[in-house]
Amino acid sequence: MGLENKEAPSAEGIAPAAKTRKKFSAVYIGGGAFIQGIPARDLSKKEWDALSKEKQQALKDQGIVEVN
Image 1 (cartoon, rainbow, N blue to C red):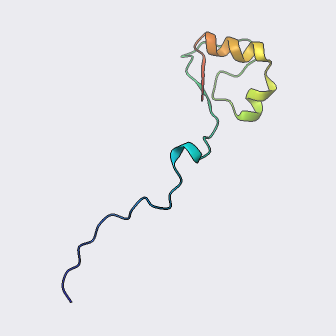
Image 2: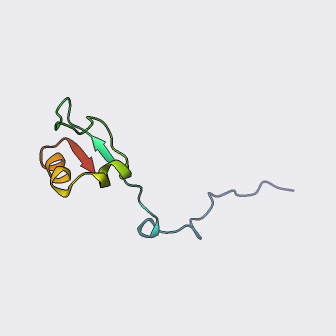
Image 3: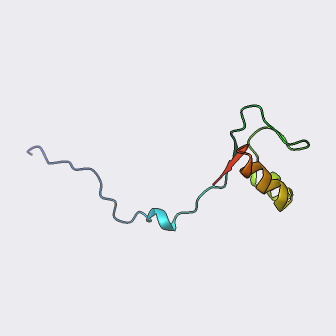
């Protein structure tokens, strides 16, 4: 038997990125800044959803949390 040409496996059968589910994250980027009553750390989806829309917006507008 001779040496076979081994190629990298094809991407066939792998779901395109657009079809994969993106994991939620609310990442603390505040560098010490905070809003009273909200932990100055990364927040879980459950914690984020428990905040009012106003507090969520304030965290984003003030550059304390980055959400994706």
